[in-house]
Image (cartoon, rainbow, N blue to C red; front, side, top):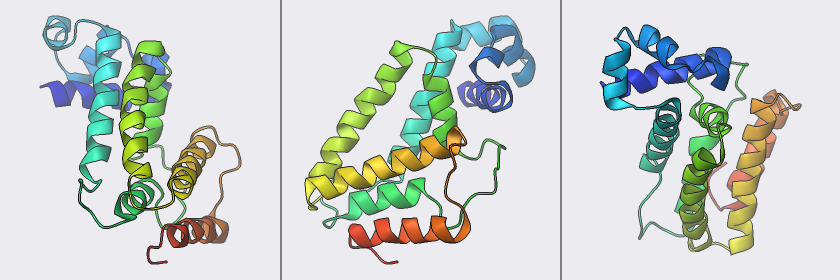
Length: 176
């Protein structure tokens, strides 16, 4: 049931941003009573926090654990974040990071969820066997790519997208 409710929140976030996430709207979108919703999530903040945590968990699930070869964490970070081909403006909700960023705009408590994850991820990146500056540069490039895409700040497309991604892959010593 929790995942069903969080799916509904994600759809509302993608369609209308944080303002669209109201308890009655989530209940209607999920096809449950408001009481049923409140049983699992007592507030809008709890709903949005649930989305952020679930998306961070999904992202973390594709990252290698400790003991992976040098550079594996940075390469997995990049490959899980920037697709090989430039997206064509898909707003179906398939892009999890923008949804998490939209959700995190809900206030400092929600940003704290991401900050805690980023602290752990940054530690893993700097302990990945690469020069810590290179690993951090990759993370910041990925973050910049998503910010540009989310806010439509002239994100790279087509050949430039592929070329930039390949440069990052080469930087971490992966295949291009």
